[in-house]
Image (cartoon, rainbow over all chains, first blue to last red):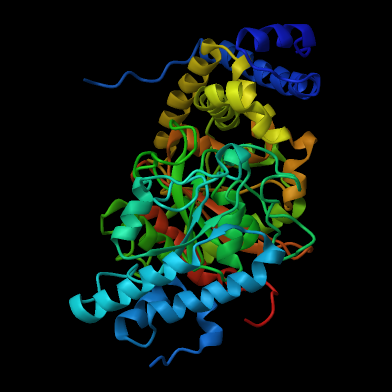
Length: 56
Length: 459
């Protein structure tokens, strides 16, 4: 998965009122890309998997 | 009058010190004074202490001494000095989490785990260094620079409970409390040649500590499994974690998730130590069987999604108002969760539920699971960007059990060519903490690694 653009991260950070520097965002881009890829993979895999419901 | 050799006091385990305090051959104030002196001498090199509570620890030791004299000995923690990771609240004692955000914070209340061990008679000797807020890559310009590994001072210690493991390995306190959300008790314990235990989720009240609440436990670090059991009894107020240790090991089956371990491609020295540990278990009469638990690697990754989202949720207000007071890594690490979605979080929790069930099923056919603790040997390798520490790359063996809630322990199991210890991880059934400690104790007694001490010279 390609890293989210710096502009997208900047927009999201601004919406959350996080005053991150350009250096922070540059460091965050590949880290967030890794995590988004993990999340996407887990969402796809877990669609077919459900834990056994606990009895009441 | 003491019969103890003052020069050896730093070598005492909790069990040994408690025995001497009980029989009157060691006074708590004498013990605390010796450890304070050692801490003052060694900490400028080891850098494991944020706050040395010498005065209050000596007062607590004197109170314990008087109480033992006039009201009797309360138990094995009475008069024992303990270190506490500096992200765990201590009443009246500064708690910084190694962050400039909390540089002057003095909590009004103890975290429940600290209150419990103080209630059992222990004294808080020091607040111990850590990765900032227990979720960061440490650097020299942190509020307190990262602890050095006492076994090889050219290396740092693994985190995040680095100071807790270094203080115990370095003989500054016989035991310490840490926190573990992905391996932060077990990894530094492995890296420093001591025992680190993450209890079943919820067994110890872990509130009052900075850590993601769904996956984080307060856990003990000590030099022996028995000491870890004593700390667990102190924190839970329940007996039964120590009494069975030392009894003959019942018929035991240890499951090895071989495919999962091989896919993680551990360092050859880690692989060799693990193979040797399995041989030692087999010589104890333990049956070693391979198990296949699908999804353990997914659980490790999912644990770090949960960690990141809960870390951001806890810190978002402070990140908005105090961003400049976070270290350069901590501010980035704690912000990652801002860019993830509730769907990611839900998927991660779902993975946890599925894999929890699979691990429990596997543990109906074996008594415990065995894996290495960390796939690399040094803290520097664990922190390298290629190891992807922000998504838990080097927590591949430890983090699954945070997400599933199973108890897991690291016990010393080998030594690398660089002179840095290597641990063995054993994981047990949910609420099977006592059974797990029994197997870990048998392994410890059958191997030499726990008896080694780092080359720090005479006291």
